[in-house]
Image (tube, rainbow, N blue to C red; front, side, top):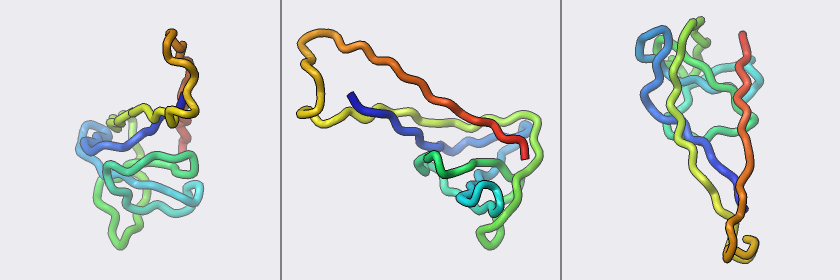
Length: 102
């Protein structure tokens, strides 16, 4: 049928304060600023910082609570790849978020 996408949104809160989004493409070895409305992917790790990244590098902030808004949207396959839609088509799927303690 298709898949889904995840898109990070603005409004990040960590420890009750506005925070800045960081991303690592190196499994946590290097952290840099990551723009909002960026698409999530399996190769990225996301974290939070109290201050904006300086020189595009920063380190994650230790946190106890966080809120990171996401937009979840469907991606439907091309019509030629869809089953006959005259009848109901059950949808089943899941997503997993992994929390890593640094």
